[in-house]
Length: 244
Image 1 (cartoon, rainbow, N blue to C red):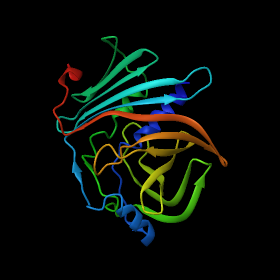
Image 2: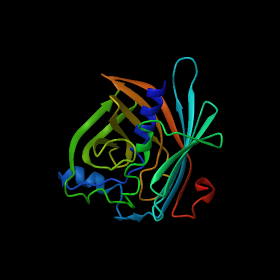
Image 3: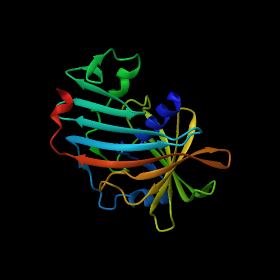
């Protein structure tokens, strides 16, 4: 169950990164440009987001709530996690990481201190076509089980995703015939996950969507989890209580 939870959190982090591209065929370029037609770039000074995931499993669903706060200017970050009634807070400041449980500081388990690696490297949500080393190709019409179908663009580029251990990642974006983004397919921790987006993006110029998630095995799509953004605050004052 721990591995399954980590997999979901790793996959979810894929949605936190701004993305880019430039070795792009014409149809792929057209669809990707449609995601940000005004070419808007958001410079980040702070981010405070809370999301809830419900992981579907036999014996009862597992609900996790994660709040991530990043102070890009002061190079501080905090991650508050609630799983099965247990809350932990991991804080990075002054160049070191501290883990707190029930108000008490405890040693950081091996590997967990990498959760904030690279978290301050990306201080803007970039346009999709900015990275000269990225590649995007148009794949035509695709279908994943009976949950996600449309025109696909496969994008490979440097995402710099904090704590995921991934420097370069491939994402398959799926669009409807009018160019609207329906979802995406990613691979993480040996799993292939389809996100089916729900509603509109939570932040203009950035791909923060609620989503239903499905594990893909062969031609079968099995419900895996749901992800909902409870709150997102960009470039607002930092909650200092997290760093006391």
